Length: 366
Image (cartoon, rainbow, N blue to C red; front, side, top):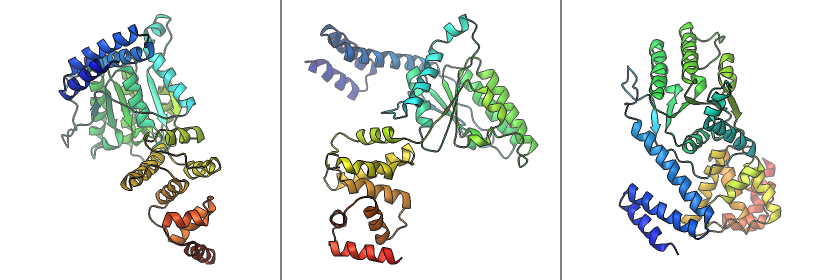
């Protein structure tokens, strides 16, 4: 149907000829539109438009990244074309992120009616709950590079240099359109009434606030912290939008399982067993669950299998939570407590049912 265009796109991609890829992709989009494939045509068009905007911005990033005066190391990392595959977040968080991006895209309209606002976003929550992925997603949707600064690495033995580094970051971000992402924000933006902090560090916080105020008049700023309770009260007022990034609930855990590679078959897990699977995963972060599922898939691939059993997910969750610090008796007891029959446990461990019973008896004695 579209084999010729697809073949040429693949060929150009292997040759690393971006112009040819774009040209043949445009041709494919036109042919699909002519055939009534409006959805596919629009998707290709949106990708091309986003990449063109990103390329134009990337070409303008000619300024070298700022460096620390002591170490001479770069104090920012630049992701020129951030990509986030299959971002899974709660619907509430998704809506807030979309609202933030829509406000940015309609900045001129807001300015025309005299509505005062800044393009700043604070993300807070447990580690591994999507803060960095959300920042990448926003930058990719806006077609802008992501300039990343980890504030915990900026603190110099000479606090005066820390203030200089902060200023360098904001000055660099002002030179071109980008999304500035300040990670580990609490490392510097701590409460100024913290009696354990030196007066010089409090002056660093003041410097951060001043730079934020100036930058946020026209720049896009995202900050992330795992410890929002440490932030200075004045910091909260600087952000137009504040979003808590919670751990995944049932719907998000289910989406992550569905999002496993297509060759993975979960049909052997019975309807009544899914609750136990979810119970084993709920309370963990997105990155924790991703690691558990990836480890399970890796083991299946190594065994040339693709069918997921109820026990596979339970065991991987147990191994992850206990970091290898467990006994056979403890693991067997865990499996039985989570609805695994003695026969299923014996099949999983490749031992007799009698041995499983012995494990349970020893577990009860302990």
